[in-house]
Image (cartoon, rainbow, N blue to C red):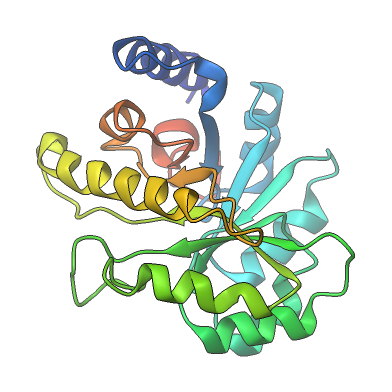
Length: 229
């Protein structure tokens, strides 16, 4: 597996998607999901120019942070249990899965730095019972309710689209997410600038970029899925 070639190919596709949607390439951050790979592959991705990495388990995040010496940005992208918050909040730069007030309360309690914790509100835009996230109808009220948590800043929204064979089928969900993000921005809430849209994975990131994604989460298409090289 040539990770550098994978990264270059993805950048080329993202650039083309940006051109089609009249966006600039630097508006999109490519995050590499490293849950299923070794620290050695993470290092190779760093050598290929990747600066943002995502982990979905607290144990994986802590292990990767200990193993990787190069300064990079770490994103926590999985469902976060309240009891795991104390292990995560000071070991990542962004939490992508804020979906309930009990979690917000724990993040606010455990986070000890002056700058607020950057959080994405997870939205269940597809309505699938198997997916976490607040509903689109509850989103505004939920975001407003976070104003009292001084250590949390809502930097954007995140969603996981349904996994389908034809990625064009999920485009409407991405369109809806952009509309939701834009609506939150118009509220001009100081605690919720909501600049980002974290959406799009290896099978549908091109459509996500065309519909406004600012962060795409790619694992297998960059680093594969095996724990050894």
